[in-house]
Amino acid sequence: MDEHEVDVAVVGGGQSGLAAGYYLRRAKADFVILDGREEPGGAWNDYWDSLRLFSPAGHSMLPGWWMPEEPGREYPSARHVVRYLTEYERRYELPVRRPVRVERVERDGPRLRVVADTGTWLARRVISATGTWDAPHVPDLPGRDLFEGHQMHTADYRDPDALAGQRVVVVGGGNSAAQILAELSETARTTWTTLRPPRFLPDHLDGRALFAVATRALREGGGVGELGDIVAVPPVREARARGALDARPMFDRLTRTGVAWDDGTSLDCDTVLWCTGFRPALDHLAPLDVADEHGRIPLDGNRAAAEPRLSLIGYGDWTGAASATLIGAGRTAKAAVAQALEGLDR
Figure: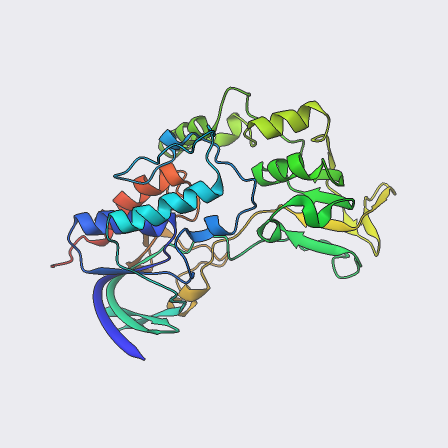
């Protein structure tokens, strides 16, 4: 396989990787972005069809170029974000190579070796921006292997048609569960189960408020939980008004035919839909052995504490306030790129 040398290799060509590319381009760095997907747009290509952003287009942009409004929509769709990211990549002439599936990152003397299915890159710095979509999380509840119905995750859901007429238990108390329930409850018999009662933001607040609180939390030690967990976008408000978002406590186990609680109650269902979040997709970094006993990589800023040639962006608040959002990706990428380039004589 071909071998290349670069100053910086960015692993992941979604929103965080592109934001890093913008600042690397401005710094005139010698860099490449390695993306495992066939097309631009990152994980936005895989989101369910009705997904809407939590903020208007004017508050959902990467650095340098405001997202254009989507005609007829205050809150842009996932398809619109894909178009935006595709044009962003072209506009700034970012050196994205795809499909390039990075298998591992390992030490090679003064450089890090990025080994992919199409070749190898020797980089003085690596910025990992693979996100979380490829690592869906499902809690290990008793009976998961006994249930004879269908189990799926947010990552598998595209539209309600495949579940029409079914009895569906939706698990999870966040935005994904609420948005999916809003449409699924119109064609299926749905039951919502959550660890704690769902908490909706006041109807007049959206993702702009969440970003402001997340930024303040990083600075002052607060948290976004003081506002709520779920953005009440119009479809969610409508579903809540008709009682489709009344949640039951989380069940304790699965049975052959459904779910059950320790108080003796049970519920038969056809499908369990796990809207239970994601974990950072970091398997490619395993050879570096930089994670702690909990699987988290301790950071100094955005650099791995145990390997300062490695930076991480876009995995959630632990890599920067709201770093997994469009608006937060740019701020995190700016700081991470500046830190990564420190001491790099180019």
